[in-house]
Length: 168
Image (cartoon, rainbow, N blue to C red; front, top):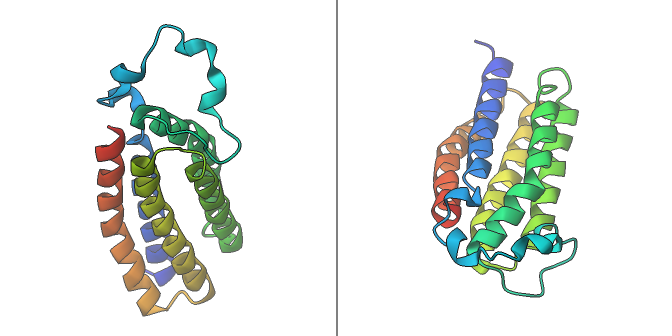
């Protein structure tokens, strides 16, 4: 197989695992979701989409809910952008960068250190994925970048597990 096909397969595989990490953020199975549910909680939807940095401490379930809600649309856009990987690598890198920017913005609004740390590891992972994708789009024969990308696929399982442990 050509290096371009291998590169595309590895990148898409890493993205699929990254998407799984995001689904691990679902608060539905969270252990402390029951602790934070109050009958009147439905009257305050402002907490689910905080546009500015969090000023109050949130429960793990609340922070995980914010993470999932804010990034679900970004993940859809990311998947769409990645379909252009083989024809327009620059657009694919742009989609990755936009997703990471959204992730970093969301992390600043979480108000929960444990969730922010797990999401921060995910953000670092994406930063490395972006750099490798850029390198491989410029030089598909870069063996070092290819090996690093293969390592990212292995690491993404660990990142997914970390988010799942925190967010249930």
